[in-house]
Length: 408
Ligand code: CTP
Image 1 (cartoon, helix red, strand yellow):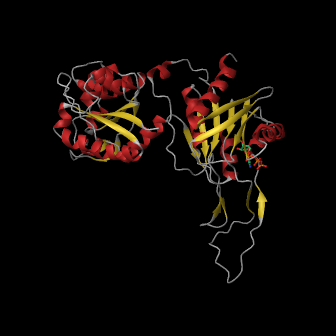
Image 2 (cartoon, protein in one colour):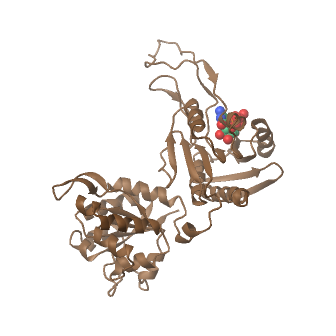
Image 3 (cartoon, helix red, strand yellow):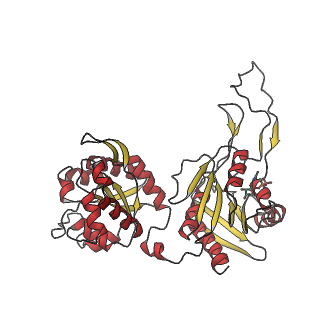
């Protein structure tokens, strides 16, 4: 699904980086609509922002002269409501100050006041302006209102000083946007009741890599998408989430503390270190075996011979957490099956001693794909959910978990 974001480009020298940001977002399949402030126009032109975004650039509250078909009716309210999230980059001290105080005296600030979605600020300013008490107060106010921040980075600045104040790099901002868009970005969602507030959850995700030598390993096709989406959905329900993940190319979900590991042994250690927890969800595709003797040096190719590879069994992370003294209240496993999906998953639930198991039909293109078809098996119920987006499955599962803890 293509996401749409609204990018407000403020008046700072870093505005040129925001043009690159439009390209970085497009690469991640995110459409950008640009608002250029008066100050922003001093640094970049509507023409360049329009050419890169492929959309009319709006600059003036009173003179929105749309030229793109279908946008003729677009006022500032529609503009702010049509986006999945708003990015302010560069966010100047002045722009943040006006937004923090609810001033609505131009198109950018009016849009920020009217929005029903969350705003990501990428501040850029002189180090003293950033550190000024007034700016820090405004940042705190915006945070309290649900705003997200990236940066500023520390480094040399255009004004010749050194310190925090540089706008984050476009690829880092685009990654943060992509990570944020995995979650619920509505302000209503932010203010909604959080049944998992005060609860801790540990989620494992992705594949593990089992080293043969420093350059070779055994792994599998897991993308990590389902686990990442579950971590995000639990955060959206108010949980404090630790995501223990094998190597993936996914952006880190917003508000999740992430522990990156490689092997099954590392994953088990990381999960144990994150205990105690109320909830444990084992989504990772853990390699069942590992090479018995991983070599310190690259194994040379023997002439004519195929080297033997002795394997040993990996620990079963789900089973060992379910059997541990500090067992989380609710332990959920996933069962990847290609046949007899529900029956095999039911016996797996009993064998691993978890409370629920999500039976996953991996006979098609599920592994690594965006969709999933699952059956949730609990102690006494069994329900099949339609083949939908992995994020929808994640939200549905988080909702069910929320019900368990709501009145507990
Ligand atoms: N799991 C785990 N540690 C392992 C293997 C699996 O924690 N070493 C977890 C998975 O994260 C998942 C559940 O156990 O939640 C079931 O994984 P699955 O691959 O379906 O089952 P296996 O135990 O590997 O059984 P089989 O390969 O025989 O289906």
